[in-house]
Image 1 (tube, rainbow, N blue to C red):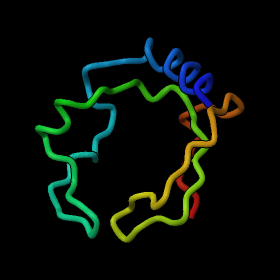
Image 2 (tube, rainbow, N blue to C red):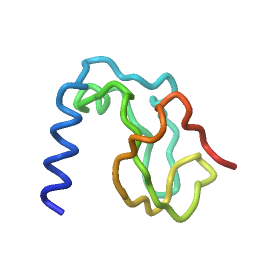
Image 3 (tube, one colour):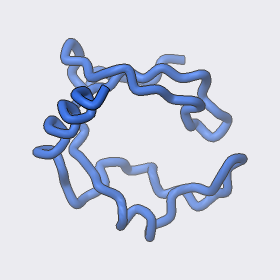
Length: 88
């Protein structure tokens, strides 16, 4: 697994940006298992341009639209990021 982390890190590094690419991330509401993301926390985060597609396994979407028990399975190169949508 360490080689996978190095490979993903190498692909992420050139995509770093100072600007958050998400318009809906700031969330000050408290969630069941923790709070949302504050503006102060966002300043501490490292951002990347959304140009890669990851395959994620997860148990469910929560009522707050968060993934529950998410597991990274790998990067995919068979789909452009703009074509990836949430399946209902």
